[in-house]
Image 1 (cartoon, rainbow, N blue to C red):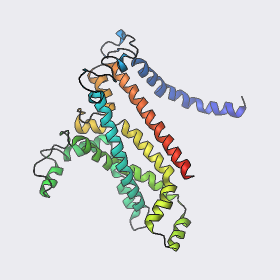
Image 2: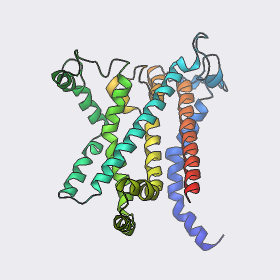
Image 3: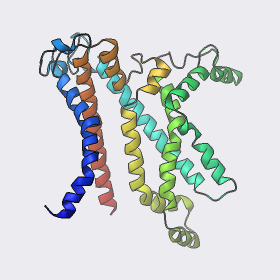
Length: 303
């Protein structure tokens, strides 16, 4: 081993040890618990049950009462809720973030102030913004219902966070409001690095701005856009706090992380909850691999 390699390992050692302590060890313990019937009230009596928590009679991927399909079980509902929330929120945040970034990339008076103001929703802690929106969306005293009734858009007050018909999409709206600035910031950083000569040439040639966007801007910022989307997708797939604060984690909005918390903390089923946590980890990992593979193929085709 060369001296450079030994030096590199020496500098990497503290980071690797830290990762082992804060990530690898807890993850390994969680995976191990998923193969047991550990209970929070008596961890010492845990027994090895193999894949029972996953595919047993009452496992995650089994039919719990033999009358409903898997997607109607609590775990199946939480997967569907999480996927719907993640896909819709990330799509809207990417679209709105791109629009805001394009606007903030233009030269206008007071641009620095507007950039700072746009970041305010993202800077507010999630719990704080969720409580704030919870008060505004209150079915009896909330300002949202008062405004919509004043404009004649609704006839009666709506329980936005309690009615299963609206609850999940209300959470999506709040998440889009809060996280769009994050997407805009990442996309704006990519726009700032684009060469100016391409746009000057297009302006001289009289190319329509929309065509310039599709043919020049979008291909050049695609790698940065992919990074922004994967960051948001990973964050959305493990969503918990926003949903829990706004809707108390009822079945119509319960996410996979919310399901894990309920089984581990509320019910005390450490083994079953660990199995759900491991499944969540694998689902997020699979989504990442698939997205990165598709993104790499797209970039190769463009090249």
